[in-house]
Length: 384
Image 1 (tube, one colour):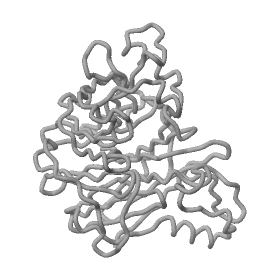
Image 2 (spheres, helix red, strand yellow):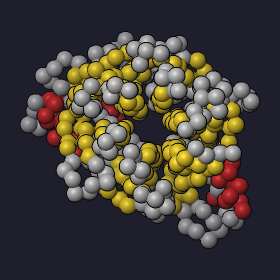
Image 3 (tube, helix red, strand yellow):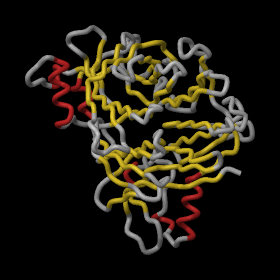
């Protein structure tokens, strides 16, 4: 649905807005800190797309309110010099279906006492902040021209927002905990907002385990039919899942997610879980490969029906006459990622048996007579 010859497109993040449109966010440039994102919008379930002006430099998470307003949060929180354990990040409130409406942009406050502020000089080893963030750096530090040594990043890297029945928002994000100052393991926290995302207060630590390869980081959350919260997290190895029965205040000990009909062990990055109208759970995840699984019970403990989208792509490339050496290579943990795919998947449910899956491809050859491109692939799936 989007491709270029001489650039890179990464990590599509897609969701269905309350006005029925699809919003697609794509990271542009190198897979690195502070690479900006742009966004596209579709009003016909993905058949056509229009580019929209970005409201924040690099969206990490977005949420649709029932009244049609859209909340977008940037990726990076900056330690605020006037309040202890408080971080500021860019936030925006808009109505995508009203392009002439005023977009409200504010600094969002995140109160994260459990997390460690990290100096910008460390993050610059893998990426460099450009102009959009400079204003935030200066305001948060109280400097006219802040340098890297003045700026500390932290708060949380949000990957999910869930709205409770009372209208409060729960945000799920990860960062380095103060209890592990060597910065090699993440902790996952639950934050709560009572003002439509303008301020967030740490509510609980969902999961932390220094014995996990990465700790707990990228997380997807759905509210099940019994109103419990179900969370699935990346750990650097297999996916783990957990439950909360008190709106995120306490959490069960995470367990490894397993399939009931296969020995396949789901892992490793960016799980995205959605619920169908009948309660069925659908989840995508990747790296290596591109995968989708289902839980018809809607409980999170009966995952099954694994489908390998990577194998489907390889089969399609073969049918379309793509030479074997130019097809998708597979395990991007064992090769250069720019040859293949970031293997981050996005999922949108159109109706109870129809859904769209998105993922990036790098140097992708679609048929025997096509040029290699970097872009976003969209696959429509039907559940029978």
